[in-house]
Amino acid sequence: MNASRAPESLAELAAHAPQLADRLAAVVPPESTQQAAGYPSLFVLVVLGSLVPVVPTGALVSSAAAVAFHHTSPFALLLVFLVASAAAFLGDLGLYWLGARGVRSKNGSRWLERLRERSAPERLAQAQQRLDEHGVLVLVLSRLVPAGRIPIMLACLLARQPVRWFARGDLPACLAWAATYQLIGILGGSLFSEPWQGVAAAVGLTVLVSAAPAVWRRVRGPHDRSA
Image (cartoon, rainbow, N blue to C red; front, side):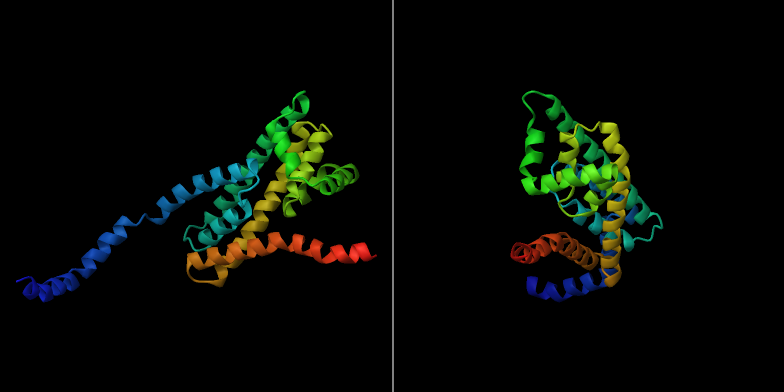
Protein backbone atom coordinates (compact mmCIF):
# COMPACT_ATOMS: atom_id res chain seq x y z
CA MET A 1 0.00 0.00 0.00
CA ASN A 2 2.83 2.43 0.83
CA ALA A 3 4.62 1.56 -2.45
CA SER A 4 1.48 2.32 -4.46
CA ARG A 5 1.16 5.68 -2.76
CA ALA A 6 4.77 6.76 -3.47
CA PRO A 7 4.26 7.85 -7.10
CA GLU A 8 1.13 9.74 -6.14
CA SER A 9 2.96 11.45 -3.27
CA LEU A 10 5.76 12.50 -5.59
CA ALA A 11 3.26 13.76 -8.11
CA GLU A 12 1.43 15.70 -5.41
CA LEU A 13 4.71 17.13 -4.19
CA ALA A 14 5.64 18.26 -7.70
CA ALA A 15 2.19 19.77 -8.16
CA HIS A 16 2.51 21.74 -4.93
CA ALA A 17 6.16 22.78 -5.52
CA PRO A 18 5.28 26.40 -6.44
CA GLN A 19 3.21 26.80 -3.27
CA LEU A 20 6.02 25.29 -1.17
CA ALA A 21 8.54 27.64 -2.73
CA ASP A 22 6.34 30.61 -1.91
CA ARG A 23 6.06 29.45 1.70
CA LEU A 24 9.83 29.00 2.00
CA ALA A 25 10.38 32.46 0.55
CA ALA A 26 8.00 33.84 3.14
CA VAL A 27 10.04 32.21 5.92
CA VAL A 28 13.33 33.79 4.76
CA PRO A 29 13.64 37.26 6.34
CA PRO A 30 13.23 40.08 3.84
CA GLU A 31 16.09 42.42 3.09
CA SER A 32 14.80 45.06 5.49
CA THR A 33 14.70 42.53 8.32
CA GLN A 34 18.23 41.35 7.56
CA GLN A 35 19.47 44.93 7.65
CA ALA A 36 17.63 45.64 10.91
CA ALA A 37 19.48 42.73 12.53
CA GLY A 38 22.77 43.21 10.70
CA TYR A 39 23.54 46.83 11.55
CA PRO A 40 23.20 46.45 15.35
CA SER A 41 25.30 43.28 15.17
CA LEU A 42 27.99 45.11 13.20
CA PHE A 43 27.95 47.97 15.72
CA VAL A 44 28.34 45.67 18.74
CA LEU A 45 31.07 43.55 17.14
CA VAL A 46 33.14 46.56 16.04
CA VAL A 47 32.86 48.13 19.50
CA LEU A 48 33.96 44.87 21.10
CA GLY A 49 36.74 44.51 18.57
CA SER A 50 38.00 47.98 19.42
CA LEU A 51 37.94 47.24 23.14
CA VAL A 52 39.45 43.75 22.79
CA PRO A 53 41.97 44.02 19.93
CA VAL A 54 41.73 40.40 18.80
CA VAL A 55 38.48 40.63 16.82
CA PRO A 56 39.16 41.27 13.08
CA THR A 57 37.03 44.40 12.81
CA GLY A 58 38.37 45.23 9.35
CA ALA A 59 37.11 41.91 8.01
CA LEU A 60 33.73 42.56 9.64
CA VAL A 61 33.36 45.92 7.90
CA SER A 62 34.53 44.53 4.55
CA SER A 63 32.08 41.63 4.80
CA ALA A 64 29.20 43.94 5.70
CA ALA A 65 30.08 46.22 2.78
CA ALA A 66 30.23 43.26 0.38
CA VAL A 67 26.74 42.20 1.45
CA ALA A 68 25.42 45.77 1.33
CA PHE A 69 26.77 46.13 -2.21
CA HIS A 70 24.18 43.56 -3.35
CA HIS A 71 21.29 45.19 -1.46
CA THR A 72 18.69 47.13 -3.37
CA SER A 73 18.60 49.88 -0.75
CA PRO A 74 20.63 52.89 -1.92
CA PHE A 75 21.53 53.72 1.68
CA ALA A 76 22.91 50.28 2.64
CA LEU A 77 26.55 51.19 2.04
CA LEU A 78 26.13 54.57 3.73
CA LEU A 79 24.69 52.90 6.82
CA VAL A 80 27.56 50.41 6.94
CA PHE A 81 30.01 53.32 6.84
CA LEU A 82 28.23 55.31 9.54
CA VAL A 83 27.73 52.31 11.85
CA ALA A 84 31.32 51.08 11.46
CA SER A 85 32.95 54.47 11.99
CA ALA A 86 30.74 55.34 14.99
CA ALA A 87 31.35 51.94 16.61
CA ALA A 88 35.12 52.19 16.07
CA PHE A 89 35.18 55.70 17.53
CA LEU A 90 33.20 54.74 20.63
CA GLY A 91 35.30 51.60 21.12
CA ASP A 92 38.54 53.55 20.84
CA LEU A 93 37.32 56.18 23.29
CA GLY A 94 36.25 53.50 25.75
CA LEU A 95 39.60 51.72 25.56
CA TYR A 96 41.53 54.99 25.86
CA TRP A 97 39.46 56.06 28.87
CA LEU A 98 40.09 52.72 30.58
CA GLY A 99 43.79 52.98 29.81
CA ALA A 100 43.91 56.57 31.12
CA ARG A 101 42.46 55.37 34.41
CA GLY A 102 45.30 52.87 34.64
CA VAL A 103 47.90 55.56 33.98
CA ARG A 104 46.51 57.71 36.79
CA SER A 105 46.17 54.80 39.21
CA LYS A 106 49.11 53.76 41.37
CA ASN A 107 48.37 50.09 40.77
CA GLY A 108 47.69 50.49 37.04
CA SER A 109 44.92 48.46 35.40
CA ARG A 110 44.50 45.27 33.44
CA TRP A 111 43.49 47.27 30.37
CA LEU A 112 46.77 49.20 30.44
CA GLU A 113 48.73 45.99 30.93
CA ARG A 114 46.97 44.40 27.97
CA LEU A 115 47.95 47.36 25.81
CA ARG A 116 51.55 47.00 26.97
CA GLU A 117 51.53 43.28 26.22
CA ARG A 118 50.32 43.90 22.66
CA SER A 119 52.94 46.58 21.97
CA ALA A 120 56.50 45.44 21.30
CA PRO A 121 59.08 47.76 22.92
CA GLU A 122 60.61 48.76 19.57
CA ARG A 123 57.19 49.55 18.07
CA LEU A 124 56.24 51.57 21.15
CA ALA A 125 59.48 53.55 20.84
CA GLN A 126 58.71 54.26 17.17
CA ALA A 127 55.16 55.31 18.08
CA GLN A 128 56.41 57.71 20.74
CA GLN A 129 58.85 59.25 18.29
CA ARG A 130 56.17 59.69 15.63
CA LEU A 131 53.81 61.17 18.20
CA ASP A 132 56.44 63.74 19.18
CA GLU A 133 57.10 64.62 15.54
CA HIS A 134 53.58 64.69 14.10
CA GLY A 135 51.25 65.11 17.07
CA VAL A 136 47.59 64.28 16.67
CA LEU A 137 47.92 63.59 12.92
CA VAL A 138 49.70 60.32 13.65
CA LEU A 139 46.41 58.91 14.97
CA VAL A 140 44.92 58.89 11.47
CA LEU A 141 47.73 56.78 10.05
CA SER A 142 47.73 54.49 13.08
CA ARG A 143 44.19 53.35 12.28
CA LEU A 144 45.06 52.60 8.66
CA VAL A 145 48.26 50.67 9.34
CA PRO A 146 47.55 47.09 10.49
CA ALA A 147 48.54 46.63 14.15
CA GLY A 148 49.43 50.31 14.35
CA ARG A 149 46.54 51.47 16.52
CA ILE A 150 47.60 49.99 19.86
CA PRO A 151 51.22 51.28 19.97
CA ILE A 152 50.11 54.82 19.11
CA MET A 153 47.29 54.66 21.66
CA LEU A 154 49.72 53.45 24.34
CA ALA A 155 52.16 56.22 23.41
CA CYS A 156 49.36 58.78 23.85
CA LEU A 157 48.49 57.28 27.23
CA LEU A 158 52.08 57.33 28.46
CA ALA A 159 52.34 60.95 27.28
CA ARG A 160 49.22 61.61 29.41
CA GLN A 161 47.28 63.15 26.56
CA PRO A 162 43.70 63.94 27.64
CA VAL A 163 40.75 62.03 26.25
CA ARG A 164 39.49 65.13 24.44
CA TRP A 165 42.81 65.50 22.62
CA PHE A 166 42.74 61.83 21.63
CA ALA A 167 39.13 62.08 20.39
CA ARG A 168 40.00 65.00 18.11
CA GLY A 169 42.48 62.87 16.20
CA ASP A 170 40.68 59.56 16.49
CA LEU A 171 37.46 60.75 14.82
CA PRO A 172 38.97 61.34 11.35
CA ALA A 173 41.05 58.18 11.87
CA CYS A 174 37.90 56.08 12.35
CA LEU A 175 36.22 57.70 9.34
CA ALA A 176 39.23 56.94 7.14
CA TRP A 177 39.47 53.40 8.52
CA ALA A 178 35.78 52.64 7.86
CA ALA A 179 36.01 54.08 4.33
CA THR A 180 39.13 52.04 3.53
CA TYR A 181 37.74 48.68 4.60
CA GLN A 182 34.38 49.47 3.03
CA LEU A 183 36.13 50.03 -0.30
CA ILE A 184 37.79 46.64 0.12
CA GLY A 185 34.35 45.12 0.70
CA ILE A 186 32.87 46.88 -2.33
CA LEU A 187 35.73 45.59 -4.46
CA GLY A 188 35.14 42.05 -3.22
CA GLY A 189 31.39 42.33 -3.70
CA SER A 190 31.75 43.68 -7.25
CA LEU A 191 33.81 40.68 -8.34
CA PHE A 192 31.01 38.14 -7.83
CA SER A 193 27.27 37.98 -8.30
CA GLU A 194 26.54 36.11 -5.08
CA PRO A 195 26.88 37.95 -1.73
CA TRP A 196 28.66 35.04 0.00
CA GLN A 197 31.28 34.98 -2.74
CA GLY A 198 31.80 38.71 -2.27
CA VAL A 199 32.18 38.21 1.48
CA ALA A 200 34.82 35.50 0.92
CA ALA A 201 36.70 37.77 -1.48
CA ALA A 202 36.46 40.73 0.91
CA VAL A 203 37.80 38.67 3.82
CA GLY A 204 40.63 37.39 1.65
CA LEU A 205 41.57 40.91 0.56
CA THR A 206 41.42 42.12 4.17
CA VAL A 207 43.72 39.34 5.36
CA LEU A 208 46.11 40.12 2.50
CA VAL A 209 46.19 43.83 3.38
CA SER A 210 46.64 43.08 7.09
CA ALA A 211 49.46 40.61 6.50
CA ALA A 212 51.38 42.74 3.99
CA PRO A 213 53.21 44.97 6.54
CA ALA A 214 54.37 42.00 8.61
CA VAL A 215 55.64 40.22 5.49
CA TRP A 216 57.41 43.38 4.38
CA ARG A 217 59.14 43.76 7.76
CA ARG A 218 60.34 40.14 7.63
CA VAL A 219 61.67 40.63 4.10
CA ARG A 220 63.38 43.90 4.95
CA GLY A 221 64.77 42.65 8.27
CA PRO A 222 67.81 40.80 6.90
CA HIS A 223 68.59 43.70 4.53
CA ASP A 224 68.46 46.22 7.37
CA ARG A 225 70.79 44.11 9.53
CA SER A 226 73.23 43.56 6.65
CA ALA A 227 73.29 47.30 6.00
